[in-house]
Length: 338
Image (tube, rainbow, N blue to C red; front, side, top):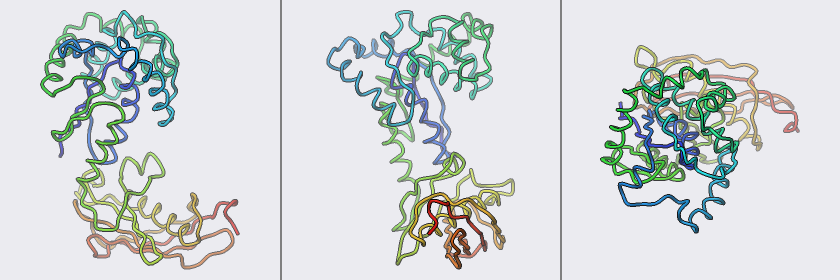
């Protein structure tokens, strides 16, 4: 199993807000975990004799335009805060570390809630009550008592100190900062560079390109690839640990989902339309097991069509060997019917 991506962030960092909302999704597309690590960004800057962008008029003016633009690119709410809170974010960091010890997903959701209130809505998160309000607004089940308990959490305080040392050892000099397989990335926009390198690690046959995924489910189990050759389209993926059942072969549920997407998109491609076709009927016959590391392709063909329906048949292969037969009926969306 590859080592987790180390993700350093701070609550006072605007660009950490963007990265917090993206990094888990990027990592999940390639079967990677993310280790979230909060730091005291001002301490990192002091260590390198650096100053905050707010103390650099030209850079701050640029960020006031750049940050909202980046948020809008990724569909995030944004209201540029008037000031980085002079009170810092010590309580925020301690709450995160306290929660992380027992429930990392809750700790992440706390971070997203705080970021949404401050950078998304432009509202203060100064006090424990305001932090609790942020959690309530975001649907995160953390009450004010739990937040206050973090103030004197010595274990969290020690973790914050040791986290600084690890961040410096990793070469961190600004936030957000990511380390993946020895490569280092600084800035929310460098998540695209991180994803580029993750894609390169997947062995893909010539002619296949990444295919934009259609839902959170397929995105978390991708990437999917496609190739257009001689007027036909083929969909594929490389098997990894996310796709396996307890017997260490590809789970039938995931393979059926892959077949569903592949055949639906194939049919729309063959009728010259681009859109989502709802599934009316789907049948898959499993005739062989698929093992980790294999290259899986779905080659489908539109065998019949009415004004409102596509009838499709296909074959799934693993490293060229047939492992499943499939058939399906898809409804053509009304606005695409001819």
